[in-house]
Amino acid sequence: MVAKIQVTGLREFQRQLKAMDAGLPKQLRLALNEASGLIINYATARMPSRSGRAKASLKARSTQRTARVALGGNRAPYAPWLDFGGEGRRKGRPAYRPFIKAGRYVYPALDVKRDEVTDIMSEALTQLAKDAGLEVS
Image 1 (spheres, rainbow, N blue to C red):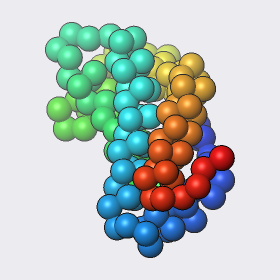
Image 2: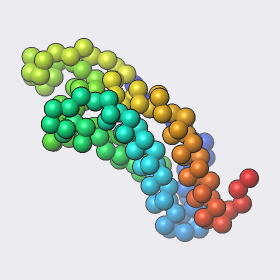
Image 3: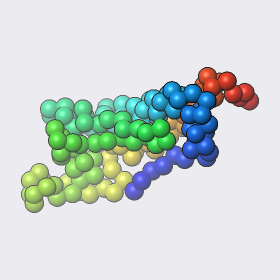
C-alpha cells in the first residue's frame, strides 16, 4: 500500500523555479521534508520502544518532487517488522506479529495528518512562488 498526496503541476512548477533561481528547488525539498517531519513526529510518538533505535530510524528522505519517510536501516532492521508485522527475518525470531498491510504507525500517521501535510505544502509552495517573484492569488 502506497499512500500518496499528489500535487498537480509540481514538476512544471519545480522546473520553472529552477529556471528562475537554481536554489529555489532546494527550498521545495526542505518543504517536503517539513511535511514528512509531521508524519514522523506523529508515528514516533506511537511506536513502541526498548532502545529507541526503531524510533530514531524514522527519517525524511525527500527529493525535489517527492516526500518519503524511511524506516529501519542497519541500526534497526526490525523496524519494518514493528510497523507491518510478519514472521521476521528468521522464523520465530523475532516472535510472530500479525501482518497489517496498512501498517501500524507510518501510514496511519499519514491518514491522520493528511490535512496538515496538505496545508504545509500549500503554504510552502505559495511562499516559494512569492520568493521567485511570481504573482500569487
